[in-house]
Length: 383
Ligand SMILES: [Zn+2]
Image 1 (cartoon, rainbow, N blue to C red):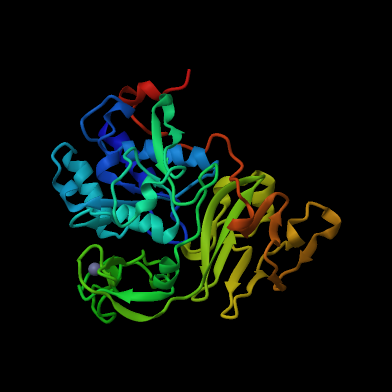
Image 2 (image 1 turned 135 degrees about the vertical axis):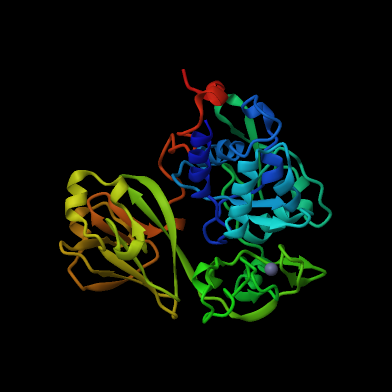
């Protein structure tokens, strides 16, 4: 049983992100683990995070939707969790995958407001600093958990379904800069320490371009983990968020920044880049090269694609479905992409800017609970 729980936690881990460009909702882990009615099990269980992540995926009809998880430090010593669960959460924190804070305060709502993200919660919250939490029309869009148990979604933006809203103006300003924490091993706002240290490779820290938003204390940007005042370390690289869409289904999002180009293909070299192999038909696998196209975001804001494949690719201007308008892209050819242009590696295997595809196109996204122990989760099996 423990083996299977570990697999579920691995699947959940792949969905954790404090990257402001990729996270799609914010959760307080200490709240989620206590939704005992979700599975009728132990008082606290980290596996419940998986049920909530699945509910979000179904809500936005998209595969591989990441969540921004905040946990109060006390959760690391909560004996209602197993020692294995506490160890896993501690590792997530050490790796910068979840944000562990000394006191939760209103960090969840702060992140939601700065990033324009919905909060997955059942509580209305009570926040003087974020009065929107209790405005009518902002709360209680029900996201059905499997088995019919509702998981409730608060939201920053209005509209139905609750989509991502815009970042707050303050959020935009904070995320235009790189921040540096004086704590030597800060995973969120660190520099990785001395690059000449023999242990430099072993340290985990968030790349400057995907740093989470600072916490504001009395108007001062502060490290949410350490409570220390952050230093402004200069401008942050610009980012464009792209989606991989295969036969109409959004499989995953990824970012390309002005810092580094991104290769997309069947299995890009060195484990970097965006790997599509697992989602392709046999014919598509034969056509698509290991590294097929490369995206570059230029400092002037232009996004370009370069073909680096054997068989070539194409661009559909404005996302046209008319094959006569498809522009072929031969090996080494590159092209600047207009806002709604779609790059096609093979028929139906596409990459475009995420904002142009409002719906993820999938009714039943793949569950992170696939490896869940059936005894504990029998309640959720579909008839
Ligand atoms: Zn810090």
